[in-house]
Length: 101
Image (cartoon, rainbow, N blue to C red; front, side, top):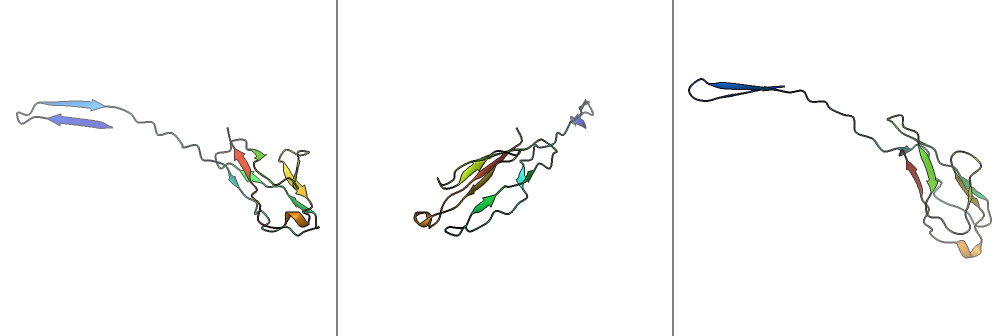
């Protein structure tokens, strides 16, 4: 980039510099679609998948989940599994977190 400043008498000065534009670190994103329902007395299982468009390694971990869902850490990405009972009927909050750092 070159900047030039001039006064009314024809005097001028020039300033040159280079700008290095760096990439923005894009957050990872989930590529799987979680189930929206579980049925009482029927086993439930969900293992999410996530990618990072920057190519960074992605770590997924379990956030919040109800007590009837257990964490399966036998693979590189954790899963939730369990069987809801009669007292578990209703809305529950579940979250997974994907991190690239």
